[in-house]
Image (cartoon, rainbow, N blue to C red; front, side, top):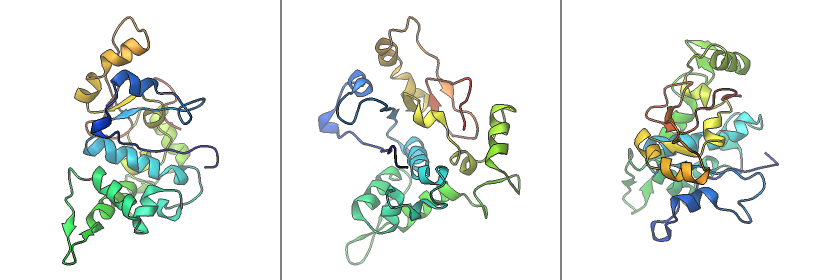
Length: 217
């Protein structure tokens, strides 16, 4: 990916910004073709977004495994980079507590295994659907023309606009809390609807923009 990068950033509590400020931030990094979205600070939204970002080089056809791509947070964590491991541990903190070793250090084994399971699933191949391999073209046809559902491992390997063009992503309760700011920022007369993400079982994930066409690619 020579023309863009993706980051998942946490805003520290002491430096809180208003909802409107977060959604209209502009500057050296926030300009031109820049896109940003708010992600709920809890397990499923963070883990799913992180997995989607880690799979960017796979979708681009650069590597088959994100751990083989040098500019990837997951690859850095697998290689033992401390900050990358701590970042991944934060994303999975609601489900996995780090185990303390005898030497005082922490084991990140369970965190790395959980993240890899989310990326690759339990099957022998991540492009498996109902026991058979499915092509990217067949997956998009099933999603867009047949309104079908596919395994999450397949979905994360497709381009999904919920993760790139959506303003707010999280539980329905979280998204509802930002409806007012979103409406004022865009001068909309009526408040938007909250939409469940389609394509697979995303758990409790919801978005403001439903995207009627070309959601997947």
